[in-house]
Image (tube, rainbow, N blue to C red; front, side, top):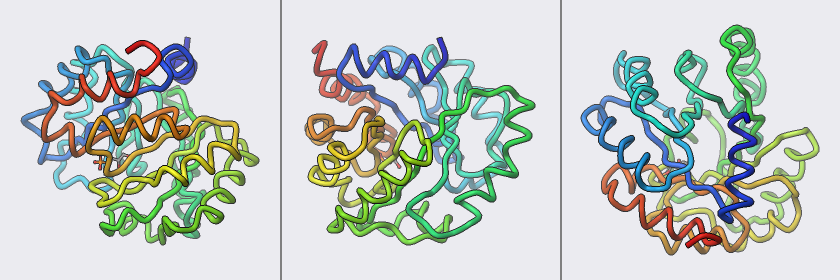
Amino acid sequence: MNVFAQLLNTISEKGAAYVVLIDPDNKNDTIIESNVALANQSGVDALFVGGSLIMDGCYVDRVKRIKDSAQIPVIFFPGGIGQLNSYYDAMLFMSIISGRNPHYLIGEQVIAAPSVKDLGIETIATGYMILDGGAGSTVEFMSGTRPIPMNRPDIAVAHALAGQYLGMELIYLEAGSGAKKPVEIDIIKYIHQAVNIPLIVGGGIRTPTAAAERVEAGAAIIVTGTVTERNSLLMKEFSKAIHWKIS
Ligand code: 1GP
């Protein structure tokens, strides 16, 4: 079974899937093995690996270390083609559909495609939507795109629908790493009612309750990064809150 099919299975069996983001930046160098080991033991369903900005040249080595320790799928969450390598089980093949920067809509993907084919890596077509989490996120800056205002569910739903009609398998609602406000519950509900592909929700989710509320609103996959980097023992609680069908 491929990684996407496994995720869909998890969503239907456990109610939703829980993904931990591991940013292979030098700031996390010393916690990689311990965080991956805790993810293995805490009911986390998969790891997303990637980051908007990597501050040294050891990225590939850290991804290899993640892959070597992981007992769950390692999914590339691309900050750019430079982060592509052979240590991932699958990748989100993303387009930043909330933006109007042609490079991140199709340019980077064209550069990546031949290497992706050569590596034989599983691709999961993902419409990536950046919403304004109030913190001026790195991804906004690096992609040179404006986020969708959180008080404009109509704009958000139109983008999500366009993503679905373009053939995306997933829609990713991103408030930005370290967001002050995670994606609002009403926006998730509204988009969930309109589209019939699974929604990933991430950015600024700090408590298991905030995660559970977003699952209840229609999120199929919840991502935590910052909070579980700082306190990896929380992974177990997040996992319980997100997997409502089996908790
Ligand atoms: C993944 O960017 C998020 O979608 C991660 O956000 O670091 O705020 O959890 P946090």
